[in-house]
Length: 76
Image (cartoon, rainbow, N blue to C red):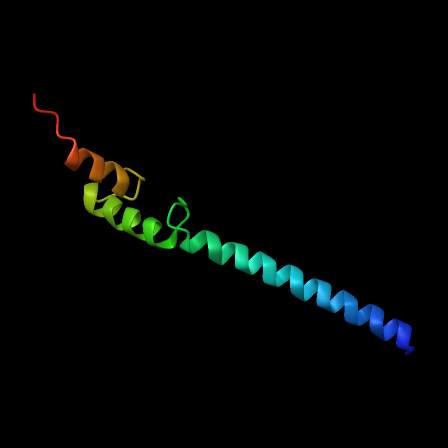
C-alpha cells in the first residue's frame, strides 16, 4: 500500500471515529440535560409515578404536573 492510500484510510478512520464520538456525546448530553423531556432521571421518575399512580403504564403521570397541582391548590 502506498503512503497516499495509507493516509486516505487514516483520514477516513479519523472522520468515522470523530462522527461516532460526536453522536455519542449528543446522546449523553440529552440524557443528562435537566430541561430535556428525554432526561433519564425525569423519565425514570415519571415511569415510576405512572405505575404508582393507577397501576398501569399509560403515561398518566408527570412530576412537573404533580408539583404544580400540589403547590397550586384551588381553594374552592
